[in-house]
Image (cartoon, rainbow, N blue to C red):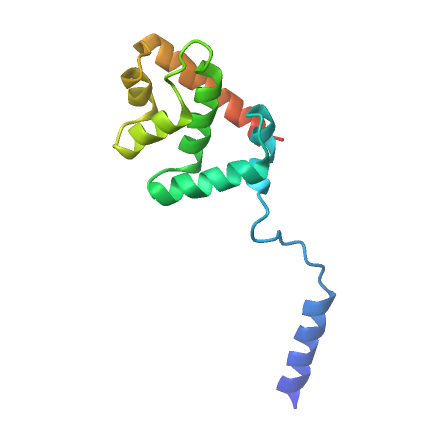
Amino acid sequence: MKVTGFLTSLCVLAVAVPVTAQQPNEPTNFRGIAGRLNTTPEALESEWQAAHQADRRLTRGQFLLANVLAKNLAAKHPEITSRAILDDLKRGMSIGQALLSLGLSAAEAQEAERTAQREVREAERV
């Protein structure tokens, strides 16, 4: 009898606690950065899922850096795309190595990566 009363109390407590969990497919992770990349959080979430499916070693940070780098460098270096960077990462290169393989000098690659990391950090604060 005491166990039943305890279980009933737990059930009442569970119903009384407001649910604040996010919906499973809600792309809240990309809200801040999506605007900087001129896309939607949903589109970025979809791209992330596809990229991560293609390369399970890919981290969210690498994915975001690849996209920010591609956006930042596109005007002067149209060959640097997020896909090209992600392909090099899949081959085992680092972000810096990928940028070098795509034609940047070591100094340009370092500066571009530093700038992109700062932009991602700022966007994550949103």
